[in-house]
Structure formats: structure tokens, C-alpha cells
Image (tube, rainbow, N blue to C red; front, side, top):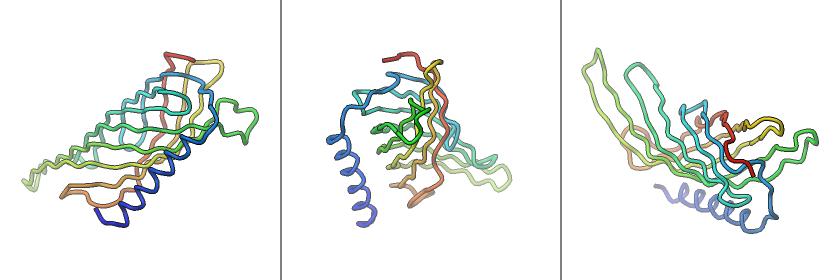
Length: 175
């Protein structure tokens, strides 16, 4: 990993940790929710508040790029939540920032060219998003962007900006 990418990643990590350590208590609308991340990659997601304002999200997903190229991933992220008080009518709206890591497993099986290969990589991710829990129904919505730095792979290198999702989760454990 280049020195400049590493220094940016380290700065982002320290910023998130500083925000977690200096914030006032945030009352989360829910404790645990499970559902789908509809995006890149399509995933099953579990989000659980460890303590306020810190949530852990873990997800497992897959994405097909072409008929012969597919990736699967396992991811985990720590997310710092804070109320977004711009719109009074949306009391359950929070924004969040976070950091995480993913393991990616790539496979290519060329039907016509006879080329077959597989690869794996580790991704370091940043998270920026919005999270909303409805007051009258046990549904949670999140929208996020998660730029990714890919490490140790021959197939994908560098920085990926095209990752993020709209998540729809069922709240099965409220506060």
C-alpha cells in the first residue's frame, strides 16, 4: 500500500475514533436490525448497537459483473451515529461515519475464451451514510457510500469508489 493511501486511511481512522470519544450520548432508535443491503454488493446485513453511539454492521454479499465474473464478500464495519437535526419531522434520522474491512473472493470462468481464474483480496472501507428508523413500524432504512481500498490482489488494485447501498432492515430488538 502506498504511503499516501496509508496516511489518509490512518487519518480517517483517528477522526472516527476522536468523534466517538468526544460525543454526547446519542439515543439510538433501535438495538438490533436485520435485512438487505441493496447495492454493490447485494448483501444480507445485521446491524447492532454495541453502545450508543457505536454500531457494528456485518454483512455477507455477492455481485455478478458479467455472466462469467462474480465476487463474494464478508464485511464488518464500526459506525458512529449522530442525530441529523436539520428536519424536525424526521426524529429518527441519523448520519453516520465509520471504518470497516472486507474479504473479497473473485472468480472468472470464461465460457468462450477458456480462461478461468480466481483471486481474493482484503478491502479497507470508509462509510458515510444516513440511517432512519420509523417510529410507528419496526423498519430501518440506511443509505451509504463506502469507498474501498483494495489490498493484496492481482485482479483489482487501488481505490474503488463505486460501493454503497440502500439498506432495508427489520428491527427485531428495540431499545
